[in-house]
Image (cartoon, rainbow, N blue to C red):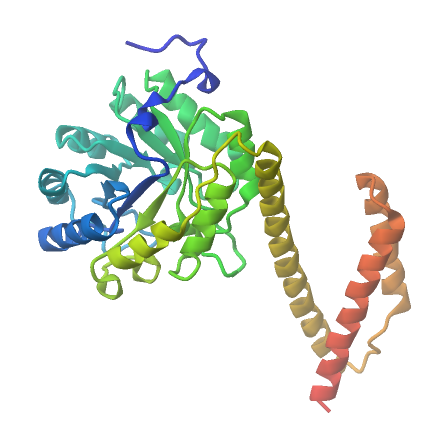
Length: 366
């Protein structure tokens, strides 16, 4: 039966998560490759990581470019069934269209998620929502690839419009044109804005897709738990180096177990001010990271300007350009309500470093 239209996301109880250990850990390979690979991975997760309650595997894989491995398809659902039967895990997979939904529901997959490439397209989300109409299975929604909070919320509202009330969110980071240490930059502010608006909707971190490598997984997962996330979805493979997709970001079950055992779970409500401090410190770290990357990009542009000046025998310091910069900085300080003196100091330091970078270019080319 369709949900009352007056009901909003903030009204959902989401009691479904109470059936799982806290934090709720979802683990398994990026892609289902073979029955043997699935069963070996599940067996080793069970042995090394008893905290894991849900086994995940990609059955259909949306790829950036054609002609790559796009998943084994429906046959992989039988392997998920066998994992459930032999090792007692709940199971989870991604669905990207109505066909996927019907097949996954028929195979009794316990948890479905909508991927970032799907969330960005309201037509796709609506198709999936209609196919899922009325299900009581938990449906998780990954943030869209681009940093758009409204799209993320809108996708969940489409599910609610079809009577789906067991909903969760997955924070998997956001695409960026600039290369950074992250595959997808966290932009914690967007995810925390979502949590603040809908504290009743469980949020999971996907450190595998945020990092794109194995080295940062523990740190990102811990950051998420520090700010009140309810769980994590971590790509785990019996032989990560030989994985058919996203090999660099998958870990072995044994590494997963060690990582989980070292995580510290923050208990909400005991030290409220400490939780608030953690949230704001995480945001500051995120902003600082973005600042450093922007400054790095600015200095690379300064290097190119230095090369042009060298080639054309132009002086490094251009007084009229410095005046343009200081005037612009003063105007922006006024607009944002920041101290003009502070902004001028920052821009002076940046300008001096730019001159130093250009001077080095000149010297290198002598």
